[in-house]
Image (tube, rainbow, N blue to C red; front, side):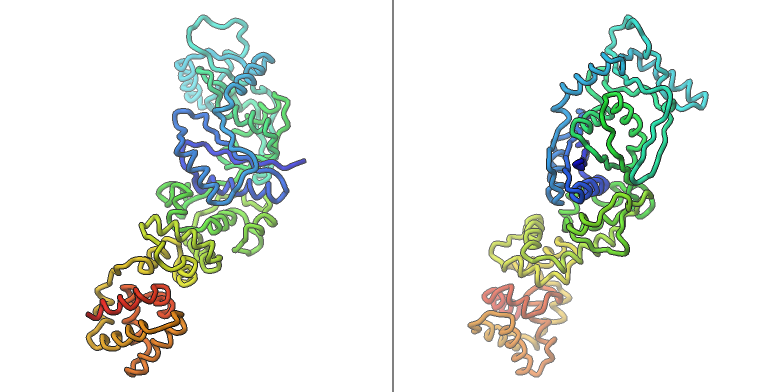
Length: 462
């Protein structure tokens, strides 16, 4: 049997952290077992689904590298087929037309609540032999079994049993003919031969209904794995108030996709005490049975720590592309500056996010430097102007522009004026960057370039 998993987001909002973790678990399970990962866009909610959300979902999956083998499939392009399957179920007396008005259903609900009963449809139209005289368009309901039980052998939750008496006759087509979520999901999982449905545990109560429809269609029931929700640091369900709305917000804030995936795979899953996982290690080690059934809490500090780790250890040439994206967001033109990979190498130890790195690297690319007043007052004193002037002349005359030769000139000026190295290096740093913090001074000067370095020194001493 070929393992086939799917990720099926609804484009009524952006791709969020909970959805990404579900997608990751589905993707890992398929990759581990040499199977296929299918992407399906469940856009049957015509009023709330947007093209903007679809674009964001696809962009988020691409940024994360969660490549799909088939799809994306769109449910709105399959309506004719859903209608045919619904007609088949009606013809086989496995579904029926329901003519109950909204008023009747609301009255029924209120009566059941008054009796402290669980609100459910009473099957009023289930055995109608003749349609009532009404001009109202009917809905279509699935004939749920009235006896027995549904046993869900969940790969994460364990065995969960549902009594069919507690499940009413689900609407599978609205009065306008449009199919409902619980029906389209079933048809798609069946026809796309999904073997493992990995999704959030908010769908667990839908599972027995979907299994009964699958059985009515004569379909093979997939295995289910329901992943617990993610909580915020305050113990409440993760929401907008806890941070990013869309996964693309994390890209914009300067997080690396590998850091986010590494963090999410550990959010409810573990392999001994290991914290850092390469993508290949995730694939090799991931097991659904090791996923915790309890909710996991989102820890922004842990994610930031992982991001810093991947910045420190990442390949500079690859990180350079992420840095370029951040610079573009901040309006920093990088074409005339030093190679971005060299900037990454210089700044990797000093940034927790790529956005922070871009902000702290602006002086490498701009002609004008923004000077911090305190740094200028402390370091660019009258006494240091002569040493800096001589330093500018020496740097201008260098025929080999390399960090080692720059370092030698700085040391020579310090010796000439009997200064501690910091007494010349810090003023030079302020002249170069506008602040008293930067990578090693010889690297900073080297990356800024010979002509601009000399010009900046002369600018601050005039």
